[in-house]
Image (cartoon, rainbow, N blue to C red; front, side, top):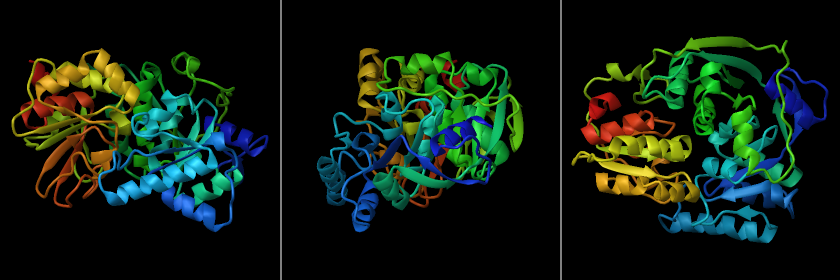
Length: 418
């Protein structure tokens, strides 16, 4: 069996599972946010459920429209808050919260070998820890909150092997953009993406979270990494309960094996309006921007902000550009403050936001007007994703986004540094 199949078999109480098989799987964690939780809560109550299956296995994080941007978002957050109070489940209030997919691993709530489901498509982020993690609809989340189980089809697994070493300004964001550009937004449809190879082994946990996060942009059910010393070091001080580490069998059956030599790839940019519309930075042309967003559940961790600060420190954001920095959690914010990153951002003419998904989904803290262009470290650039349907979003790594904020146009970090 593959790594994903091992985890699902263990949680289904079976010795073996195969791709295409339907199984009932016990879950270790159920997640929802301020947009998706209200629907799940209403369905949970409609089916007559009185209590969640296990209060310490259900987590709700308000992160999309908080701090509340209007009355409607305030009402949604309040509905979720009151439900959590009644049920005794974990709720991360403003001031203690973060973007859910940054916060949960940081808090030790997701561990290797877990099955995690969330009412958010980027729940696949937790595959970086060697967990099976996937997004589901709010009604599925309601059922899971009541029963502790999910019903699903076992996905096949595509193995991706990355050879070589990363160039100066190339990061994990470029690896996943390069991959999505090669296979398309449906290239891993309802499959698991297993990331391996020497280039992947060299990635930090922050980098692995970025790659796993964007597996959904290739249509994948999940993205996953094997557990190694990097993983174990990350969870050592965070784990508050036992966990299991699974390994794929040496004779595991993969639906495909795809290999890349990444030694020569440049920073990648996804042009509008698809994460698969990818070109190397040298081929992007002259694209002026109005806004740069650095943060999100994809690239809002300390390593990401440090990379952006490396570019912005001692330089100034172009007077025509709004540069918005969003730490992924309060801890990332605090670490950035201690490391002097926040001062570097402010002195460069950027603004620093409280942790929020905000502009990623066109919610607040950076909505685009018609005709405006943004470069962003977020994960999607569909039509209207960040505001007006007549705006454009380009995706890139934090170094490219920061360099572009300085230059006023999409550019390579090399051009700004030199």
